Length: 148
Image (cartoon, rainbow, N blue to C red):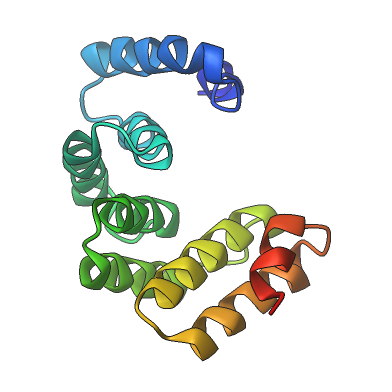
């Protein structure tokens, strides 16, 4: 996972990371973390969104209370424009979110804020984004979302 996930932030290595996870899934088709990583990569990039939903749904069927997986599926639905579905999964992720690393929590709150904002729930969106800044004070992207 670590080797492939290092490539996630580098556009030119995106396909290499995809190939790595696809190879892993050929060997271990029920590896929930590989399913989640690949599905989230597609969702975050906004490509192969239907496949992302399928991969992420499989990951959740294997680990239904994993807040990161629920966040990933919610994000995929958001990218598809299915906002009610997205909101459902993000609310569930927030309910189940443990004391993960602040950065992991911040991603979930940021996604929840984006979805709330898209649904016209401005106050709720601001609350989620403010929570991001409590967790990761130097997140300038979220700070800009809070700027009127």
